[in-house]
Amino acid sequence: MKKIILLTIIILSSFANLFAQSEAKIMAYNLLNYDSSVDTSRNTHFREIISDAQPDILVAVEINNQNSVDVFLNNVMKAVNSNYSAGDFIPNPDAYYDYKENAIFYNNTKFRFISNTPIHTALRDINEFKVVHISTGDTLRLYGVHLKASSGTTNENKRAAEVDELRIVTDALPIGKDFMVLGDFNFYNSSEPGYVKLLNNTNTGYFLDPINQPGVWHNDISFSLIHTQSTRASSSGDFVGGGLDDRFDFILISQAVKDSGGIVYKTGTYKAYGNDGNHFNKSINDQPTNTAVSATVLNALYNASDHLPVIATFQFFNLTGINDNNLSIPNHFELSQNYPNPFNPSTIIKYSIPVVERGSSSLYNVI
Image 1 (cartoon, rainbow, N blue to C red):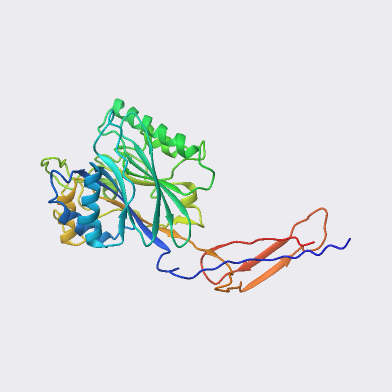
Image 2: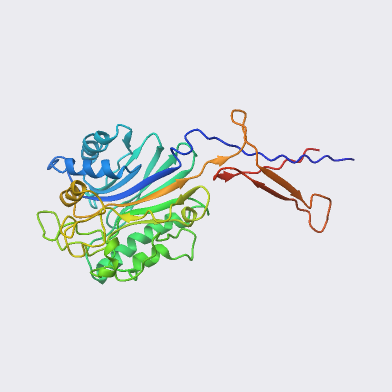
């Protein structure tokens, strides 16, 4: 019987909003005990920061309750851009911390919120926020964390135990999933068991530090550019003093987010927002003049929280090809070794596409 093998290469392409929505800024920010029933005077400062940074996703920690989420959404986020929304809020169990919760805010023209799944620990919940990038359909899991504070072996072990609960979840994910963990980790150095466990690649649910700067971050001027606490030299109320001398806040990414294709961290965009590296043990708005952001934003960072936000840019690559509405073909393709060979029954297909996107090839055997 004669068989006819039809080889079809499908290159699906959609250029609508490709360049406008191929990148997204993701921010982690400790809001310092944000309680709308006690004090909303900091909203002005938060608005300045959000307006300047323009994050597409904000994962916030130390926000106290549903009403505080609503007030922050309406009086900070939406006051900057009406397209911001908040994901479902789930408080910590009453038996644990019933305050200082995690929340997510997002640009609803770029992302669709799917779910908030708490991961219970002996202390605060870790929240798995799942979102979908609208133009590409890629799913991203963001794990919002606020690990145990303070130095010492006992507290280090408590942070490590919280990380253990997170790794149970991420190790169970299929290989190649896009995820990240972000928030306030309270790590003092890269030898802490919690940090080591996050990066342990024995199983597949490990994380990578995008800037890869291991060491003793606490009170070491060589890490001054990545320190996130404190924004002020002197303590005041809930604000911790001491100046910028700790790297407590992080965005850590999965291997899939580091690898090319799909969702990818854009190299060089990770920063402690507003930190110019010249204010070690000083207030963020002290001399010498901080050139990282404007004076207005510096004052806002000083007055809003004792933590700096951490922000990074991520690229979302569209699946490229041909469809009925928008035909696009490769510049060139070749078929190699496309003849019967029982010792090497393979065909090599080479093609190039005139845009930087993901490609998909499908083969059909028509008899």
